[in-house]
Amino acid sequence: MFLDQIMIYPLKSGKSRSLAEAVIHPWGLEGDRRWAVVDERGDNLWLGEFPRLASVAADPTPDGGLRLAARGMEQLIVPPATGATTPVGFTGLDRAVLADGSAHAWFTELLGRPARLVWLDDPRRRSIDPAHGGLPGEVVSFAWDAPLLLISESSARVLDEWLAEEAAKHGGEVADHHGEAATDHGDAATDHGEAATDHGDAATDHGDAATDQGDAATDQGEVAIDQGEAATDHGEDTPVRGESALVRGGSAPLRAGSPPLRGGPEPLRGGSAPLRGGSAPLRGEEMSVVRGQGGSVSRGSVSQVGVPGRLSRVRFRPSVIIEGAEAFAEDRWSEVRIGTVPFRVSELCDRCAVTTIDPETQVKGKEPLRTLARHRKWDGKTWFGIRLVPLELGRIRVGDPVSAR
View (tube, rainbow, N blue to C red):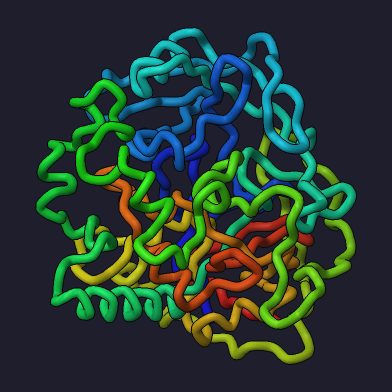
């Protein structure tokens, strides 16, 4: 197995950025989800409710600010957030730093409702929810509900096959998951309609506003995302609060009593964490390790949009995508090592309505959640991917060997 891709999301719910390498902090990948959009009460405005957030490219500036761009919006350079703090409604965090007022106005125009941009100044202030596998001393950025999310390309390819089978059953109609391949009533019909409607994502005439009978209900109810996965109050692919992810067929939560992060806390600024040298490989029933030739990785299978019959992996908001594993083998893992950095698996990831939003057009449909639920639903939830917590500090690179047990 090897590391196929690394992704960060500088703005929670915003566009992804692919990296060749990344520094691992106790709270996750450097630069990942330190900014978030909230309402006037401090509650998170998340992608499942405001799909147009997925159109926002947020690029960190050298001075610690943020460059914002989205279709139909003027580009904005946000200075570093050094102002007052404000109450926020994130689990394990009570306050965050307000960004410059120009950012509030920008997001208010984008979403068509009052919005504010906030900055997580010190991720060590936010603990991982124990209900989602967090252990004492473990911390996380604005991500839910762990520092990293891992998906397997092998598992994703199986999902592609399931989606193709579903499309064939319907007489060859292009299913919702072909939104990336430009369905004739998706990105073309709306002219990227988010910018042309009063409320963007909420008002497209072919699905976003029709969640009563569309993605939330599904035609046979297999997904059961009404009030549950589709309406979770905390954003990107988070489980329903207070419930733990369970391994299929078992009753014990998928958690390991792993030791706390070694190496101690590191400063927020001023350089990367050093690599821990001489780390021993995982022992026990390890998966075989496969490197890309010369450390290179073929990117053609990872996150392209516009490939007919292939789901964009960005829908799952992964931090890392691995290649070379048996499909869904990750369900059974309790530890993962990427390069020299070990992680513990805190829980499986149950999926919400965020996966039904095309990351390029922001059009919402029923897939892949409907089809995924037919194959991967148990304990009342639909599962895909695993959440990881770093056990050591370090650096990971595309092409690194991956092992697991």
